[in-house]
Every structure is written in structure tokens, then in C-alpha cells.
Length: 388
Image 1 (cartoon, rainbow, N blue to C red):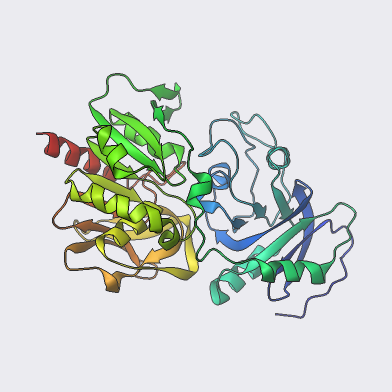
Image 2 (cartoon, rainbow, N blue to C red; image 1 turned 90 degrees about the horizontal axis):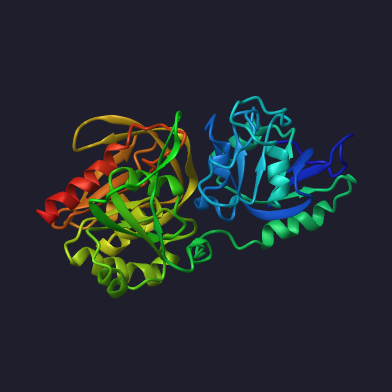
């Protein structure tokens, strides 16, 4: 990699600076200002609005490897959280005028409205290759229309950021009060639906939950009660759930696990069906006696092949995680059920003596892929079996 220059090229109104001193010039998009965090990349070619609002991206700036981001605009439906959670985004091409019948606004305006800083015109292939080879770095995006930047100060800020390891970010993204969810999956003719008569009651622990997870559960006739991450096992059991869901979320599972894992242990020990996704998967593993670790390069995209070892089927999955369960630490009473075909990392597990299972990826993925929707049905089957 050539030595960076601190002199902005003509027309530069933004810069991405990494902790190692690498400098990427570009054009500012979204809000003015600067933001510091971990720089990662996502290989999805659709769903940028869902990605930016995914709570699991707290503390991170997303490099989109697909060049045409923002081309279908934004709307108020394709969101996983009320506001964007990712700190900012890094794009190859400028944002074009939206071209889609469902669009209600421009992606750049949406970013600015929500205070999210971005940069376009970056050589995202070069940046992605750097992340892939050397790991996800700390970085700063600075958007200043005047084109003046203190690069040395930005490098210092990138180096001073503590990193995601050891961070409990779930407590910042979790709801503060419980609520009921009854919205079902979207359809092209009717939009989102409403749950009618519920057959089952699921309590979902919110570590930074995505809305489409809740929609999938409601679409399978589950009344869903969402509770804060700090809710005790006794409070959850007092709600008389038929099943318990452990949500996705950001940060280090070991840090969140200091208060969440004892609760999860108690819930699993009751024998009630428990299903976990992403961070929920990692913390279920911790509760069952395994360990987690930070990955050099996380899995983020909608094209990740995973093999279900129980059926032999390979499914294409959507993933977003920077921590992983160490497969070599699984205790004897836990079975590995899914593996990533990219790097062999653990992608699913189940307890052999309890109706508890979890996956590292996102079966609820919106806009897709939808290969893994069967996991929600598997959860409901466990609930039905337990009730009968």
C-alpha cells in the first residue's frame, strides 16, 4: 500500500482515516461531522437500509462492496430499527437519484436526517482487501464541505478508540420497557399484516432485536412479548411463555453475558424451548459452557453458505457478526449443527438434553435470502411438542 498523502485532492469533502495511518479521500454524504469506530465490510447487493438499521452494527462503519448503494432510495418500511444504528457508511459510487416505486426519499437525505456520516468515491476494493488481509481496523470518517482536515488528529482519534472487544453494547440498544408485538411479514399486495388469534406465547429478550425476527414469529401465530436485556429469569417465567427467544445484538457476547448468561442458564434449565440468533447464539453457547472469541474478519453479507449437519442441506444465509463461538470448546452435552462453508466456523448448535438451539446467522433476513426460514418453524414445533 502506497504511503498516504495528507493533501486533499480537488473536490474532496470527506476522508476516511484508519488507525494505521491509511487515508482514503472522497466526497461527503449524509451528515457533516466525524465518527469513530470499527471499519467492516458487507457484501450484500440489496438491503442497504435494513443493514444500516440493524442494531448489530452498533459501533461500526460499513464499507459496502456493491458499488450502487442508494439507487432505490429509502422508505419507512424497510427498517429493522426506528433509526439507523451503524455509525456511517463508505461507498464507491455517488448516490444516484432513487428509482423505485416504493421510494419515498433520497438515501443521502435519510442519512443526514438521522445524523449519519458517510463518504463516497472510495476505492472500496482496496479497503476491503485491507480489511480481509489485516483485520477490521479502527477508523474515522470526517465530512467537512470546506475540505480542510487535521489528518494527524484523526489518526490519533482512531487509535484512541477502544474497540468492540469487551464492550457491552446490548444495554444501549435494548428496549427500556417491555412491549407486545403483533406485526406480521410484508406482502407485495398488503404490506405488513397483523396477528389474529395467537396459538403460542413467546418472550423475546431484546439485546438489539431486528423487527423482521418479530414479524416471523408473529406470522407463525406467536404472541410476542419483548423484554429488556436485563430482565430476570423469574420475571420472564412469570409471564408464562411457551418459548423464549434470545435476540441478535451488538458488542462482545462475553461482556453482555456477565448479566445475561446466568438468566439464560436458568431459562434453559426449565426445559422450555429456547431459540437464539447471532448474539443470542453466542450467549446460549456461553450459558452451555462454551467460549467465544473476536474474529479478525467478521461475516457480513447475504451470500454465506452454511451446511446443516443434521440434514446435509447447504443454505445461503445472511450474516453479520464479528464474534464467534469457539467450536473446540463445546461441552459434551452440546452438538454442533451448522458450519460455515467459507471458513469452517461454527454456525449453529443445540443442547442434547434440552429443547434449546441457536444459529449464528439471520434466518429472518430481509430482503433475503430466505433459505433458513425453516428455523422459526422448528422453534414452533418444539413449542408444540412441549405443550402436548
